[in-house]
Image (tube, rainbow, N blue to C red):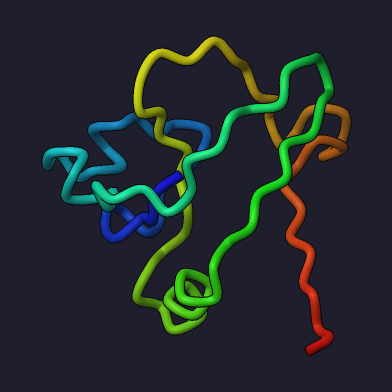
Length: 101
């Protein structure tokens, strides 16, 4: 996973393409080239992959320095992901916060 540093902040998921998201600039101008998470996808249909986002990255998102997080494979990947609309969002991404010190 990488941080989204640029690109079109008002992209429409129904029509977005890589070129339109990047505003026809190279992908590495919209996405940070440094990985923040390098973790294998849990195999199996409907399997869940749990990741920890660092406090530093989360703070950059809150501060508006980063616009989000994108999945970017380092190499070949054999996986598919459910759309957030599938089964009324049943498979959407969830963020869990640990509020205890």
